[in-house]
Length: 487
Image 1: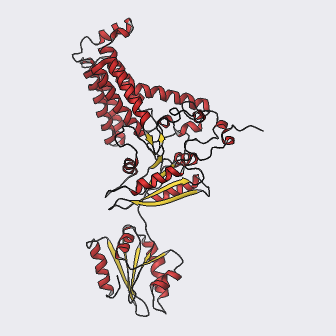
Image 2: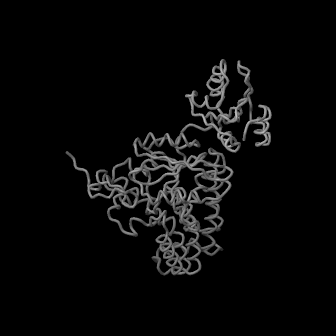
């Protein structure tokens, strides 16, 4: 678009692009040589200090003796990069990114200065992935800050960052982060291809982007990992994974992701290997409890009581003599109550939510037993299952466990042990059929890779863990995985 109009007409044309919104500001000026000009910017996403102390004083100084033009400004303004354009759409896009647009009289091009300043909070302690000995900083909503946090952990010349945009309206910036000499090229190409194929108006968070990228949108299991910890992301990148950071989101997406990473937590790597191995075994035990205990309880009580030891069966029968509901409805009633308390505790203010959750759970649970609405054994099963479901370090996987629990309860309620076993088989087949960006979901157990067992259910000593996972890294030389020796 050629600037044959006056400064006022040019400003009016730009303002009309935004419907004359009132947070778009302009600042007109006239140099000592008589040349008119104007600065246009959004006052809530642009740094006023940059305008008042850098850009405007420089323009005022340069305009004392000579007429200004875009080419001269680009060559002499060395403080920041200056972009020159005549395209009105590029101007609109840059204004929305917090940049400053300069209009000059008798010049056919616009100058764009970088002066963005979006509000964001400082890195704080993670609230979802808490650790005892780990770092106390998490991601924020600024993409540049998050990349800077990763740069501090991974100071390697092979650290790569590639930017893309997703969302036709939001134009959300996305950064693909990886190590050039370690990552698998086919996984990186698949990531780029899937990002390019996203067709939607709005992408506002990493969690939303994650759903667009996953292999199977119908699977109840997460096929990629979400983390708010830079140290966890750095470790994954060092292993050969690819991280995706999203503007305005304090979470990173890590891909590929395997099912057995569910039991891994950053605290494991800050403790002795035998302590971490014991804790992981506890998580595995809790995993089985949270999924299978309610369904197994229904199957045994309702269909196959003969499989329960006599003394325990008598005790259970006595506790259920006054309960008017079938055991499956009794258990579902308590599970539903627990879910209500869980949601209420999240939505209430933090100090009040914890109090209401604890007191409400104790009072209602005991009142339900005394009123013979539920039996004590059912209350114990539900309580143990609920506590076990919180043991998963991966927040998204905990939701999958909760859904699976209800599905297995329904299967056991209809067909007893047959339904329970059938549901377990269907679950196993489903897990074995899933892939995360070409990597089998049950790796390294299906397919079997003994080399990668050093960081699964049991954590091997630190000197054995110098090997990178073979399904993630291009480094596969035999010497890479031998344990280091002292002396």
